[in-house]
Image 1 (cartoon, one colour):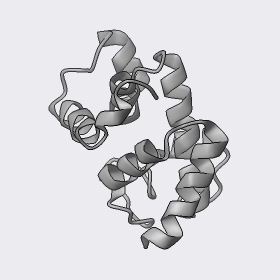
Image 2 (tube, rainbow, N blue to C red):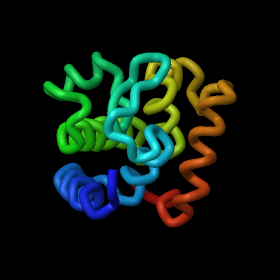
Image 3 (tube, helix red, strand yellow):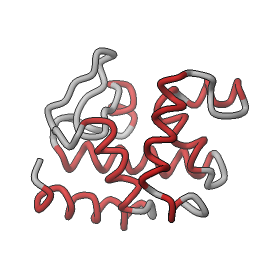
Length: 132
């Protein structure tokens, strides 16, 4: 999806949810490479790779609609940041592996995919590691 179409959607959701636009952008880049039609092997869909149950939780009728997908993904990030007291590493871990696994482990789960996911995003966001 071209940046001139994507950026305003990201900024709108960031402002509405109080989540940094750079964080949303980084998740989109890592999750789907900014491809609105992306589908993972596990069934995650759209720009922010929402699982069907998450999409349903946030009232998404079309997970491939960029505005709905980004809005739901931003809400999920806000929810996770709140749950983990602004800890971006834990929020990203839960976004990737599920909050149940993060809660069980009490830290970033020892899953190579999740460890790489968190470190890849944080490496692109050095200014965000101090806040949400």
